[in-house]
Length: 469
Image 1 (cartoon, rainbow, N blue to C red):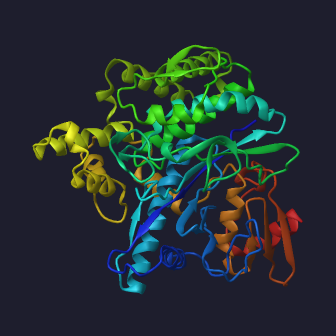
Image 2 (image 1 turned 60 degrees about the vertical axis):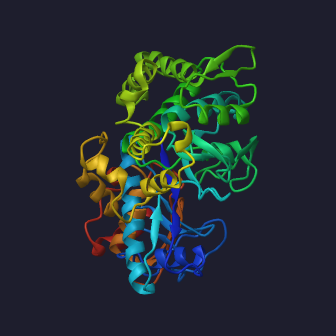
Image 3 (image 1 turned 90 degrees about the vertical axis):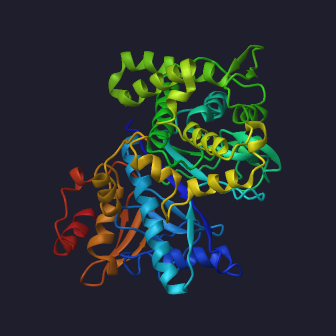
């Protein structure tokens, strides 16, 4: 089965010059102001949405931009590789920044956009990953295997955070921004009593054939390399799980283990397993990576081999000298920067985390709408690239050609005034005679550019609609 995945990000939003403006109002203004969105294209999600709703839109690249829980949220289109996931994730950053700048002009106040996961005042907002799985894979197998992977991967995917606890009430640095907000092993919630395993079962595809694994434990990352490994290693893990090639490694208490891993920048804390053993997060990741590498030897076509190689190399470098990984993973790059800044201030490291300027630097790292410390590192060649600027620009306007997102984005681009509604798995499009066609997009790799045959211009859309009817 072709691996289909996607990333959705809720962005922090703030207008310091207008403290009375509610974040929901700011978010609505941002989505409504996005330049280039065709009027009249909206997404019907869980509940019907009026087609004139300007705060819930489908974009020409097949993505979705909308307001969710007082945050602007960008859901990237369905893709089949981790590299493509990175390109569309970065295109989402650019889209939200462009929209914020346009909204700032309309409102007359500067709107800041942050790619982080907490305001350190008790609120957390997510960066969720979605992977399509066959319905034939039993949930019990997923339930048994996945927590140890999600918890231990924090040593790779964490964005880093100054402050410990939901309100940042304890001083210190931790690997992730999300770990302190998880309270259960399993459940359907995403905003309260968050579970390590989210049980939401909305495949947005034929439910008899597919399930969508909705992962809510990950951080929103600035480093493209981190995002690449986040998407790619989870895809590899799931492929290996389907092949029954993973070791049996189950955490005794995943929630406690998640916090332990996040609070341990030395990577040395041991985590109790259900079989009585105690392993570090690095031990667990190495065991999973080794299993993936072994299965990839037998079935190379099933894996992204560059992801597997980069994963193993990174783990070896973390084992030998974590300092060498600052060019690849967010939390280590951020920790380097914070330590250097504390030294410039003449602060002892034990006292440095009480210094408000370090928390301000942490926030500046996440800000997207103006240059910040991450941009300085990236422009200086100290952050490993995964995709080119040209690829990101293309991802902002073109849908992936190898999933159903191609048809969705193409129709939105060519005939926006005729798209009455669009969802992940269906569209309603009117032809030039006024007849409404409901298009079935339930197969995620069905109506691709190759299978449809391409649509050159608006004049070819009627013929396409008749062909798909």
